Image 1: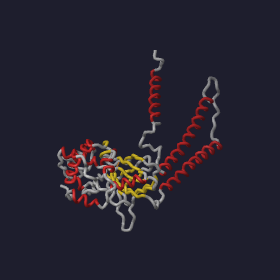
Image 2: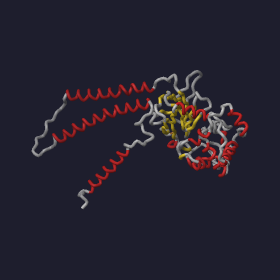
Image 3: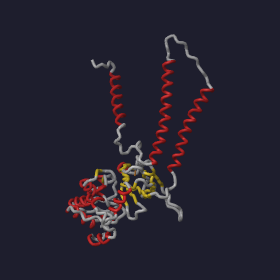
Image 4: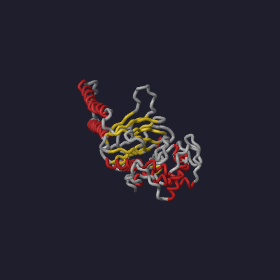
Length: 387
Ligand code: CUA
C-alpha cells in the first residue's frame, strides 16, 4: 500500500515538492547577475520602484484572494438552499472599485515618473567619463580622462565617484546591462550628425558605492555570438584604481618565463599587433580588443571560456571554432576579412603563455613613465604591416 489511492494526486504532490525546492533555491545569494543587491544609487532607485510595485500588487492579491475564498465558502451551494438574489448594478461598489485602483496606480506612477527624471539627470560635473563601444561580440571601454587607456570586456572605474557612460555601437544595436549596477541601455550605431550638432549617444550615470566585480552581458540580440558578449565592471577603491592605472602606464617587464618570452617575440612580429594593443609595447592596433592585462581578465573571448593558457591557445588557433562568427583570423583560418596568421602550434602556445603573463601585478609601477618609448624602441621590433 502506497498511502496514495489516487496516482494523479501522488504525482501532483511530487510536482509541488520539486517546485518548492526550485523556488527555495532562488533564495540563495550567490547570483552574480541579480538585480536584488544593487551597488549603485541607480540600481537602488530601480529596486525601490520594484519593491513599491510588488508591495501593492501583493497586497491586492491577498485582499482579492481572501474575499474570493470568503465568498466561495459563505455562498456555496447547499442542499435545499434558495437561489441567491441577483443584483444589477451598485453605484457605491462601482465608485469604490474605480477610485481605489486609480489611487494605487497614482501611488505607483508618481515615484515611477520621478525615477525616470532622476535617472536621466544631466552629467555630474565631477563625473568619471567612460566611452562604451559595443562590437560584434565584445565591449570596448575608453577613458577620455586617461588618454591612451583602453580595456576590453572589463571596465575599470573608481568607487565613490559618479560614473558617466557615453554609449555607442561600432556595428549593430547591442544593450549594456550589468544588473547590480542597474540600467540596461541600448548602444546604437551613431547616426551621422551635422556640423556642430552633438553626437547622439546614449548615456548611463551612476555612483558605485562598493568595490567589487560586477558581471553583465549584452541584452539585445545582435547576431551569432550575442549570448557570449559578456562584460564585467571592476570597481576599485580610489587608491587601487590609481595603482591599476600606474601599472597600465608602466612598460611591462619582459616575461621571466622562457616560453612567454618567446611568445612575446612571436607576437610582436606577427600580424596580431595590427589589431591589438599591449600598452607600453609596439603593439598599438586599435581594431581588436586591448590586450594590456590579458592575464588578469576573467574570461577569454568576452565570456566564452575561463581564462588560461589552454583557452587562449584554443582561441588563437581558431577563434571561430570557440565563438561563432568571431572576427579574428586563426592560425589556419580566415576571420574578419583577414588572412590566417600562419602561426605554428608551438608559436600559438608561446603567444598564449605571453598573453597570460600580462598582468597588472607583473609590472613595476615605480618605473618612470618616460621610459615607455625607450623601452619599446630598444627591445622590440617596429610594428609591421599586417601580412
Ligand atoms: Cu551584443 Cu547582443
